[in-house]
Image 1 (tube, one colour):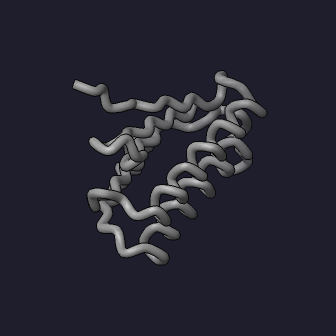
Image 2: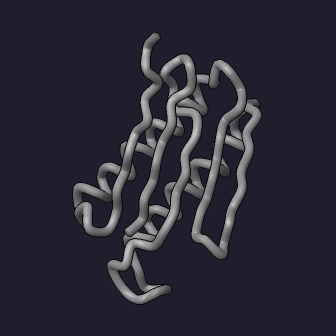
Length: 113
């Protein structure tokens, strides 16, 4: 299963995500759920880097199938915020289509003090 966790910053904006695992929908290299998630994540990262002035950090642990991405600008620009909202919408759409057996999307919201 692919697990994507999205984290909010202090302003309540999506600011960070962690993706791990493989969907297991089909054989490696033919898994359309993994491919769809990968395209959304890679496109989001590339678009934020290319089309915004937001500072960000990206890392990948291939041996553990983990991708980490964080927009470190605070507040996050409207463009980056929209791209991250679009990512979450796309992930929820995939989960709705293929089910929680293959993809889990979790949002960690900042709690008000």
